[in-house]
Image (cartoon, rainbow, N blue to C red; front, top):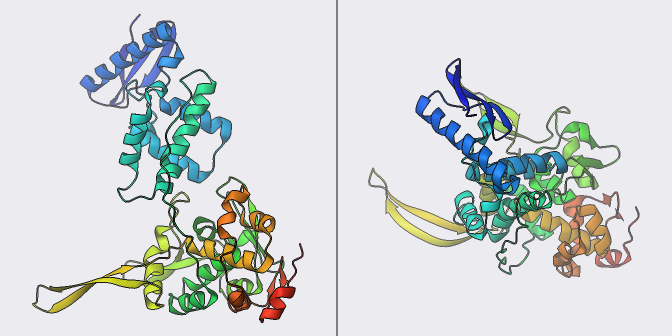
Length: 394
């Protein structure tokens, strides 16, 4: 029996039984020709499923839905999955299951490489390509393979270039805070003092902040768990100075119609990128003398006025503040296990890159940013001798 095509409102639907499979769904189109093509594909897919089994017909959207139901990934991982489906299963957001979508078994190394090139920017870092495309695609297909829908994936992972971990000295951090915009300063102090990732800081809500106990709960972190972040006295002072106590902790100015400026929460980008502060952060780094000029190009504008275009190189990104916190914290405690627990890393391998970085003579300067006391480390040193005597207590 073939499928019947009928109209509901302006949209074409199909219904019927093919190869023992009952199908009743929308085609998602008002075009009769496109609806006929959709019907033909669904009939073909039903027969393929009957003859070859699910292994030949389960598409990535179906596998991703099963994976999400089973693993309940974080919001950030869900956004990566959504971008994968936009590439392999265009139109999936409309709720239409299209027989032309890419089947799990058809996604090989070449398909993975094409997805990386299509989804990631040409200048994307290797780690970004792995995190946003290869890792989630591998997770979905591994889930599908365990259910017999495809072979287990074995994608090549590009080797990230060996680079150094950029971090700021306390003196550089003071200069950055001095030269940043007023609304940005409390956020940067929080990131420097807690090691929160950018998204964790941007979306922090006052209901998760306890100034009395010097702790903030970071929700749905990168590893999918909530994490308490200890706030040194300098961070508590910065947050206490904020005038509001409801909703998002960190706000930024937004120009409304009519020219009025209002403070509003940062845009929710699904816990991706942290680009909401990149422009302001780069400008502050330039004013603070942390970025260097690599090229100056003279040019003349439309009015004939000679100008110079300056190209900068900024070695720091907003994520460098997390590197900075980890370096400072390790410089104070010299305990990689404690650093791992406080920073929310899953393994010591990720912690080792922060060890042996910070010269001991700058350790006493940390108190200029963190204040005099840390809830985990205790009183912070203000001279070299006290740095040697420092002990931590949970």
